[in-house]
Length: 366
Length: 149
Image 1 (spheres, one colour):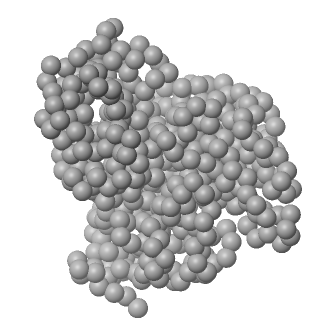
Image 2 (cartoon, chains in turn purple, cyan):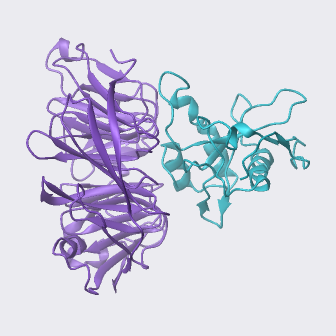
C-alpha cells in the first residue's frame, strides 16, 4: 500500500502506525532488540518496529529526563541510549530481577556507538570522547573513561576493529577535521591523529570496508566537501572533492560499501558507486558519478542492513530501498532526479596533527 | 569581533521593550573558558540577535531571551566560535543592560557544572522561534535534539 501526500509523490508507508502514540521521532536506526528498526523520540522514548513500520509493542520511556534521543547502540546483552542530557545503559531483555534497572551516565552526548572491543563510545562535544563498558549486572560499576579533547569538538564517533586487540576510533571533529586513533581498552594514553584544512568543518564520517591496518574513511564537511582517506591512520593528503550538484548544509554521510548517501538541508543525494571508484584509486580520472538527488526537508537519516535508508522528515519517517535506488525505479525515488557529475577535486593545504589523549575515570558514575 | 577590553554599552535600544544591551569582554576574548561570539560577527550583528529575540519575545519561563541570526530564507548563521547557532541573554536586573553569549547546539558542560539540559533552551523557545518564522519545523527539530542546521 502506498499513499499520496498533497505534493503527489508516492511515499513508502512507514510512519503512520506510530503516530497514534504521539511519537515524534528524533532518531532512527537498526533495532538492537525486537523487530527490524528502532526509533527514538523527542521525549526520550524508544519504539521498535518491524520492516513495514508496524510497532512491536508501545513506546518505552528510556530517558527519564525526557530529552530527545540521538543515538542507540547495542553490545551483547546491553543497550546504550544517548541524549544531550545523559547516556543510559541497561540490559536489553532482562531475564532476572538482578538485570533490571539502568545506569545513567550524566554526560550529554551527540550519539553513541559500539566498538568491536565490546565497549561503547560517545562523542561529548567539547568534553571529549566517553568510552564505557558495563559490568556483568546493572548494579555493577560501569568502567568509563573520557578522552580529554584538548580543544577539539567531538561530534561523531565510530569504532571499528583495529590490528591485534586494538580498536580504531574515527571521529568527526568539526573544525578539527577527521580524527583517528588506535585504542585498547584500559590503556591510559593514546594519540589522536587529526587531519584538517582551513575552512573544513567535518560533521560526519563513515567507514567503508577495508583492512584493519588501513581503515578507509570518508568524511563530509558542512558545505558538502567530501574527504576520502584510503588509510585514515596514515594518509597525509586525503582526496578532497566537491560535487556542485550537492546543495545545502551537510547533516549525515552514510554508505553501504558501494554508494555514498549524503543528507543535507536540501535533500538526500545518492552518489552511486563512488565508494568503489575511490577504493579503486580512480580519483585522478575525471570519472563521472551518477547522482540521484531527492529534494526533501530532512531532519536525520540512517542506513539499516545496508539496504534501508530511513529518513526522518518534519512529519514522516521515510523508508527508501537502496536496491530500488540502484535500479532507479522512479516511483520509489520521491521524484528524484538522476544526473551525471564530475566532482571538483580540491587541493587544500592539509594539516596533520597528533593530539595526545589521556583517559580519566569519569566522575559521577556509580 | 572585536576583542573587547571593556564593556561596550550599545546606544540603540531594542525596538519592542526598549532594552539596553552591552557586549562584554568575557564573551569577546577575555575568558577562554567562556562561550565566545564569533570574531566575524560585528557588535551591531550581536545586538541584532538580541533585538530579534526581544522583538519576537523568544523567552523561557525564567525570562531569558534567545536569538538567532538568519541567512536568507532557510539558513542560520553561526554566532559562536564553537559553531553555536543560538545565543542566550539571561534576564538582566532592573537598571542593568542585558548581555548575552552563544549557547546552543554545542555540548560543552558535564555534570560538574551546568547540566546539558539547562544549556538547552526550553522547548517553548524553539516553538516560539518557529511560530515567529525564524526557523522552520525541520530546523526546530534538529536544533532541539542538539544538531546544527
